Image 1 (cartoon, rainbow, N blue to C red):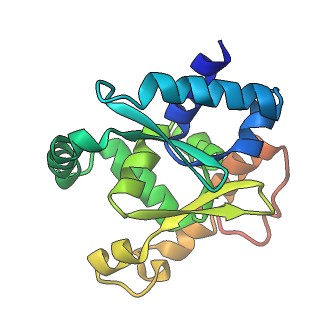
Image 2: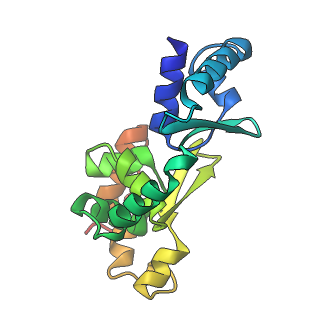
Length: 190
């Protein structure tokens, strides 16, 4: 059962996860997790599987089988080369005007799960993910590639940036997530 849960967590994460993080998150010990990792590798790291388990420097990640690289590359090029969907544009706009932001903060504003959208924006190189030690989770901000694409030097050059970046209503929406309060004298209401 742990092997199934491990595979599901690695799939959902879509990024390398540290083994020590997995031990804690899966409420297990190093030896039991190692057995599950080895079992998952035996199951997935075969020629007939499209998914492989990659382990390096104490981190695990699911990846596509190298034998399928050409097909995956073609699909990704077609899938990622098209126009952004409305939800992707909304998420990108929120990150541009309010970033850096955590996934829960973005979801608080949008009202829906943004996991796949964030992954798509990351793959396209439009946003960046960085660890934030104060928020204890990754935060997202627009990438330099995105700024170059827009032809601007920084997000502050976006239309109405000040109104949306420092907005009391949006701050209150985000604060509901953490239960904090906002000093309304410091922010503008739009």
